[in-house]
Image (cartoon, rainbow, N blue to C red; front, side, top):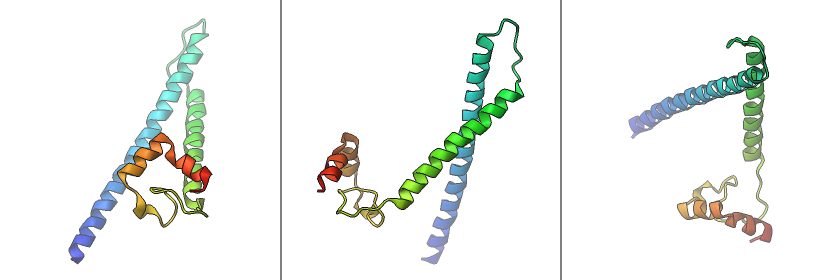
Length: 123
């Protein structure tokens, strides 16, 4: 029984590491795409050939992407941590302590916006 627990812990650690690697890779790809966009925009109006390597554009792209990704992550983390449900939340809501109420039907209803009508109606 105990070995299964430790095996699951090891598996969770490996998956977490893998997700962090994917997240960092996604940020690096975003920085490269924003850099390419800025480079294309700078080449568009230039009358002379422009070098492909422009560190000033990279120094503009990297912190910009970092601010947007970091700000969005912080905002989302704050929303999840500070969410409170003073009423009886709709089935499948993500309010603290209610995660056991999730099912596929509630996700389907979320996509259709049913949770909004239940939230504002106080149901």
